[in-house]
Amino acid sequence: MFNEERDYNKFAWEDLGDLVKGRPNLGLSVPVLVYRLLQYTFRDVMITELGVNKTNDIIIKAGRLAGRQFCENMLNRELDFNEFVSQLQRVLREQAIGILRIEKADLENMRFTLTVAEDVDCSGLPPTDEVVCQYDEGFIAGIMEAYTRKPFYAKEIDCWANGDRCCRFSLKLQRDTE
Amino acid sequence: MIDKIAEKLAMLLQGKITEKIDTGKIAGEHEQNLAKMLNQLINFMQEVHDFIIPLSKGELAEIKISPKNFFGSPFKELHSRLLHLTWQANQVANGDFSQRVDFMGDFSEAFNSMIVSLDNNEKLLKRKIDELEKALSHIKSLEGILPICSNCKKIRIEGTDPKQQDSWVQIESYISEKTEAQFSHSICPECIKKLYPDFKNGLSG
Image 1 (cartoon, one colour):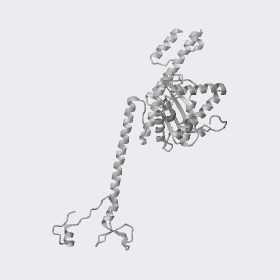
Image 2 (cartoon, one colour):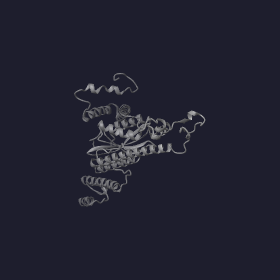
Image 3 (cartoon, chains in turn blue, orange):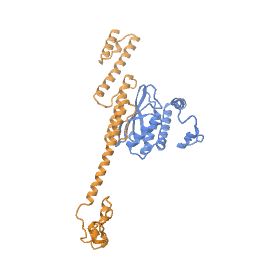
């Protein structure tokens, strides 16, 4: 899995291991600090090795793969959209990933505007002109792809901080971006 | 120069959005930087002003506040939550009672209680409608003229051949089939006398 050369993704949910058996004493959760330490250091090294564009591209792709797997393994894809959104909000909250709020949903054209507050990736960072939530962009698009079975595109369009940071994303079908 | 800046600040403190200072006419680096910062402050206040006035009137249209405008953050948050609540209220109006408002204090509690009440009321209403429809269908199922044998009192099933004996069923079977009524068989005093004349006191059922 991790030591073979290949040009396709092979990740499967089972590759995460049996966490209950694996951590009988320490439990299933790690602090957000540790999660960010991992992601930000990866990112820092990738920027120096691969450049910003390539790094962002990889992070979006990884987020997309994670979103698809998350949807396929943690969510019921048979629900109608409204129930699916309620379920997604609940699971993201339970898993302490973030607080999802839908601002607009155009189901006919499959266009959405949503915010994620207290996001595991970026809450606490000051708002800047820089987009920092590339992993979220991929993650959100991946979830919608797995649910609708159509390619999606997500873009962070705004962010603000009022103690906690909140990011606003636009979500639409990939074909509408071409 | 200081007087000019003080005048602009005084206007901002009174809630008035003032014209920016023309920095091109200012000599001295420090004064110019100060004027630029004041202009940025005026710009931020202008953005917030243009954003919050329509919002206070309930207009939720998209309005731009630059990411570096920290004064705008709480208003952006408010705007975002109002958009989300508007979406949720529409969802509830369309019958989606799975919506819940999170992390908005007393408002969450009030809104969520309202949704639970609406959900319960609708379920109760649907149950009542179901019961009424069921009762109505029973009434309808016994409507109209029933063909009955004038001798044995069997009833002919609708749409069957009157000449075929199996088209005719006992009245008990017919009513049990069409309704939820059940029969307990007994015998009336007149029939007892006729069928069992030895029983003087009759039977009760």
